[in-house]
Amino acid sequence: MIIKIGKTSGFCYGVKNAVENAEKELNNSSETIYCLGELVHNKDVIDKLQQKGLKIIESIEEAKGKTIIRSHGIEKEIYKKAKQNNIDLIDLTCPIVLKIHKTVQEYSKKNYYIFLIGINKHPETIGTYSFCGENSTIISNIDDINKAIENFEKSKLKNLLVISQTTYSLKLFEEIVEQIKQKIPNTVNIEIKNTICLSTENRQKETEKLSKEVELIIIVGGKNSSNSIKLYEIALRNCKNAIFIQNKNDIKKEEILKYEKIGIMAGSSTPEKVIKEIIELLHKGG
Image (cartoon, rainbow, N blue to C red; front, side):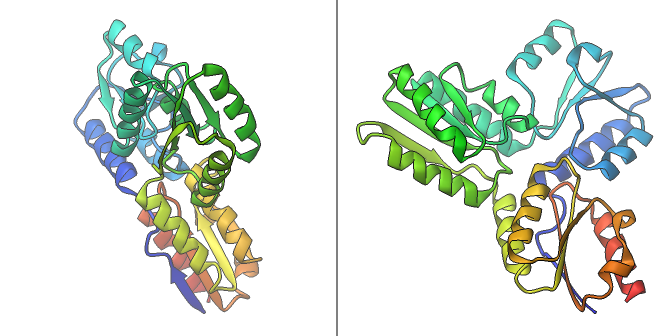
């Protein structure tokens, strides 16, 4: 059996930073530390942090002490609520996401309408959208373009910023941007910012390549991980035998070991330990 592992698999900088700093806080504190939503979208990571004492909460009103802001970021209003309630925030938002928050605020002040390309229910998109101001629309897919343009035209603004969620599909982002360019009049000043992070972009490109070279490709990631879902969609387009798992417990060895050439790619929230355990299981079985 030949196993090809994606070189870009595993933690990206933002996730690594969030997990390491959360662990430091937990190790150095005797009090409960809260986290507003899941720190990252990976069950194995969250289970480990909860065992160390992290308490996941769904609203800032539930916080009774130090509270971590997850890597995806939060809505603008939550910062104000935390301050009003004297909650000490530990901001572990991905630096790239924070930069996007700053960018959309600046462009909003310069009278730009903002198209935010991203999954509308994803916490990163929800957080970023709160910094965009009232002249903005989320575009989750191609079907949303016409409504977004209609909203833009109603605003009477002449400047348009198109920006993206960091873990969005690069292919779909490019398709949406192309359609926007075709449908917006030449009199409009359009600025396009591809803010899909380099780690996500490289991972998607490598998945595209790897999925064409193997008989079976295994995507490892949290079931609610946006970037992992995108990898699975890419893999499925290029390899008829593609599976999406969270860890080694999801593997049905009898179905997998019939393949001679297997590829493994993991999302940005997947720990190296989880990837290694899957490789070891396949080697033992093979």
